[in-house]
Image (tube, rainbow, N blue to C red; front, side):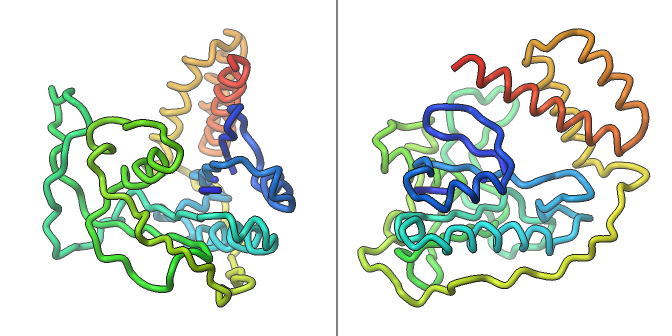
Length: 254
């Protein structure tokens, strides 16, 4: 299994709470071949590592997933847990980003011919050695690995030419991996701020786009439009409601 709160099995589009996913982890045959775990972006339970959120919540998420996997020896020995970061967080990098192959021919506004600042990618598995892989990868390296693994065919030009991390996976199963990761202590006194950050506002806007594609009842949409005017706390609730509505609409099409 290649490893996400929201996860996509092979035969369905579903939204599942993380604890339900961990219940499935107790039986290896109940877990699909691919799972995508999406963190929470909204206070007060945000665990996405974005400032000004508490980074220990992100560490907690990673530890929870690892411990749930590691508790089932059969599942652990057949899994690859991939932890990816989408941004560099504003930190300086002395390495100039290299050139990149554009993903397609649509370059009217952006050429997409250069990579960005380096970000971490962590491979967690008993089949991966303890060390650093020094090579040029990008975010499509994960897609490259998956398309090669399951013979899916290329997903755009960049993916087809991306460097896969297949060589980092060995034929020897390690026996020295920790049985459990410590759960960091978290300050539970966080409250909903008086105003959302720019990133959180963008997530609210994105949820509105998803709502427009869900085909929901006009009365429900109107009620949400009124609810968002009541402040950050209600905006967060509306965003979650919109996303859940969109996921339900997609599941009904299968």
